[in-house]
Image (cartoon, rainbow, N blue to C red):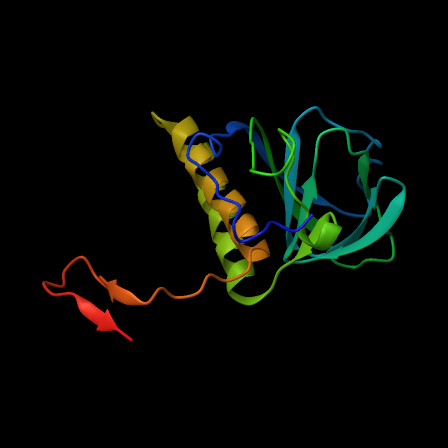
Length: 188
């Protein structure tokens, strides 16, 4: 399902419950992960390496920069690939309680109907930075940690949603380019 430009996301709808993060590396000597599903949503960002995932009995190749979006009830499993020289390092985020206009509750629309979102360039760098920030925030265990982690989760979700939306036309008329400007710029 492609999100339409007219789909609006209100603040009340983008109030996910942050559940967990987990970072791990899968190599040749790892045990075989179980084929399973969850009642919550899960995103897995591939920080490095290559590998394979089985999702709803279809095998997918994954590589650095890929983002897996696993909706509730979707069966999935990371596969151990002895032929891969570089182990796969993944960063997981678990969450629930999202509602995107035009979608079922607790459902994240998938880019082009696929469960793997291949990122590159700026998008990949931004996701990597968010994952690193989440990992650092989780490690310090400071007050309001939950809300900081939730704010990073919201950034991830909005980046994925925005990437699927058609660019909006630049409005004609007046615009403030900066809060510091003391005048209004007229556009034609």
